[in-house]
Amino acid sequence: MDHNKVMEFLGRFTTDLGATGAAGSVVVGNRLGLYRALAQGPATPEQFAERSGCHPRYLTEWLRGQAAGGYVNYDPATGEFSLSEEQAFCLADPNGPNVSAAFLIALGYLRAEPLITEAFRTGEGVGWHEHDEDVFVGCDAFYRPGYVAELVPNWIPALDGVEAKLTAGARVADVGCGLGSSSVLLAQAYPNSAVVGSDYHAESIELARKKADDAGVGDRATFEVATAQAFTGADFDLVMMFDCLHDMGDPVGAARRVREALTPDGTWLLVEPFAADRVEDNLNPVGRLYYSGSTFLCVPNALSQSGGHALGAQAGEPAIREVVTEAGFTRVRRAADSAFNIAYEIRP
Image (tube, rainbow, N blue to C red; front, side, top):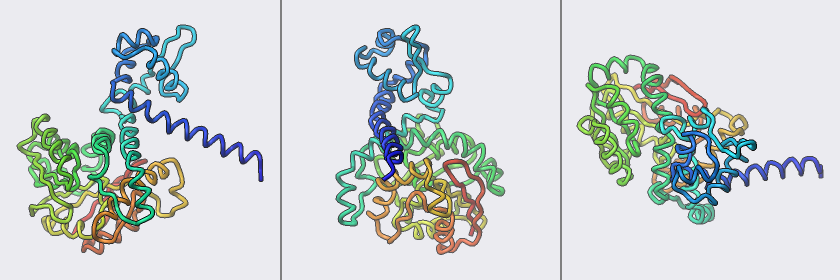
């Protein structure tokens, strides 16, 4: 046994365990608005207590732990803690990467650990609806900035002829819409178009309707409770599906339903997590992030449904192509990608 390798591994363990514990502190900061408060300017714990309305002793420990992890900065000369412009953008701006919401997702799904542990033994599934509400709310808060950055500026223009249709007025289905952020964004960007969002999770649909009403697009972004294999409507010019096909037990059935619902020259915009074709090429920090979420959310949900599939969040392009071609689609094009997503243009 190589002692240096043992120490190297223990160093990795220390980093991981510290990060795991720090996740709770990040969620505390998210819930209490501490990052937004700190973004207002440097402060000692006592000053920060006055600003945030929280107890100074708790804040002292929180600030020091955040500084140890590099999430905030500390000036030993003044005893003040602060956020850099970059840290504030990532942690305090809801339209930035909103990374604190990602920790909300993780802590939410980790609450299901007893269910997931038992599922490992039995092979049974754990449905999306069985998870803590933080999973649903956290996913919407974390994924929304990515959709803001990509959907209208990049993904739609990357599709052949779709932007012109949306500008003129198109019928759009947003399948697996969750809390409806993608539906609302599209309705806001293209006022002549109408979007129908669907999701099997009734609580998410209730929140989606409120989100659309609050944004003033409730007349053009409507929602229904329905599975991806049974959403209603026909003659859609565009069907959108974001980060959800791989969660389904019957992705082929969902793809067939999409094909039925499209116009003859319609387009399916399918956005999936970025993944390389080979397992070894996914063994990196992004892959680790996705495999962890997939173990607790994606695979268990798929196994809770009929259909026999459990693609997981790192399915990769070959698996996606196999599903959509089995459903009868003949044209699949990788239209755009980023560090976290691949956007496919799929046509009958």
